[in-house]
Length: 384
Image (cartoon, rainbow, N blue to C red):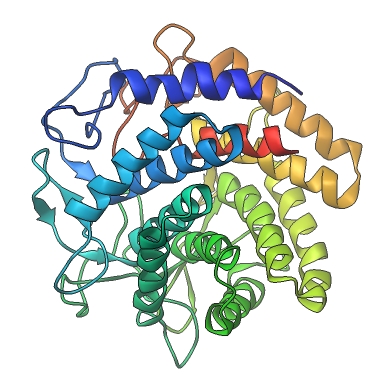
């Protein structure tokens, strides 16, 4: 498998450098739609900006190109100046194109991504301010913890009070706890542990791994459960193949960075079972379907699902030395190159629809579409 550095530098990162930099108002534009039209007045999301910061920081750390540090600095400065709440702590969910907060809710998921990004920026540059922000966000996230039953509450108002609508997006269920938020806190804590091995975060990370083993992972099916009430009762009946395979490698990364041999031994068979269950979503052309919801298979091929599956199955090769996993990763990468990469306009399509057509009704770049899943795939594969 090759071509990952070329894809990263000449297609993904170049798109963001050339088309998404907002020279007038700072940071990055909020949106380019699926027909490649820039919407300069679109709102800007915390998650997108944090993911941009993470990606360019990681690219600079790995490839040592000054322009990637400059892009990371742009993202860092914008988040610091516009998304961090100087009064109540944490990061706002959304600002307008002028950088003024328009949705001040505190989504635990967004706090996790900001922490992930700041810790990576510190890894890449050594700038103490970034580490200070990351540690502060760790303490903020810990105030979102359910001290009684474990895990983290989904969302809060601006001043950290309970909120009625806890959803990340219209696609999500309005529940008190979700797999998705816990997965990305896990990922963020892994990154912070790399640079700050404080006993408090080590203990919290062990608790988080335990949450996945005891509540999120289904030993009966091998899949992850997605939505829960406050008492960890499962809500809904959805299998997300992309989240399954993403969780498999992020769980392994978490216990590896923790350095807990006992926990690693417990997690090893679990991540294999998750990866094998996720393979139920692999289609005859080598791609991975989106989800199984109430018995209906959604065969839309989302960009992020394909990217995470490449990384996930490549991790499984390393852990288990199994050629079947290698063949899956190779087939997914071939599919991405042929059908998901936009060779004409740069970046990746949101998805291919079940009928094979490009889904141009969803963003090329925007609130949820940024260089994180595909950029991270390339960075991980370069490092293997």
